[in-house]
Structure formats: structure tokens, C-alpha cells
Length: 87
Image (cartoon, rainbow, N blue to C red; front, top):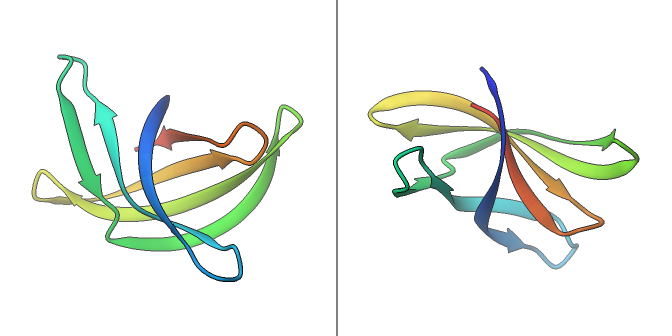
């Protein structure tokens, strides 16, 4: 996996306990097209502190271009922003 660290738009689900689960996200490609990627499985959910900000880290897998890929997306609790960190 390589580090990308791009901001993304995410559709997520929150249950009654406040747990967040990403469902799908939109990623702007290098050629200015937008690709929608459905999150098939969340493998690990953990928290980390990056530059003083507490972030939720989701290690996920999805079928992207007919290839099963692992990726990591992060949610910043302070700014409420999503980021595709690794793919």
C-alpha cells in the first residue's frame, strides 16, 4: 500500500451507540474524474493520535477494478473530515 493522504467524500452509517461505519466514498482521480468506491468490509477500526488530533482509522477492503484491494481511511474527530490515507 502506498500513502496518498487525499480528502474524500464519504457516506457513512452511525448506529445508536455512536459507532461510525463507512459505506462508500468518492475519490477524484488524476484525470479529474470522480470514482465511487463501495466499502465491502471493514477489517479493523482503531484510534490514533496524528499531529495532536485524534483520528479513527478504518482498514478496509473493496473490489476496485475487479481486484480486491486493501486501503486505509481516516476520520478526524476534531474537524469531521475524511481522508484516504493508503491504498
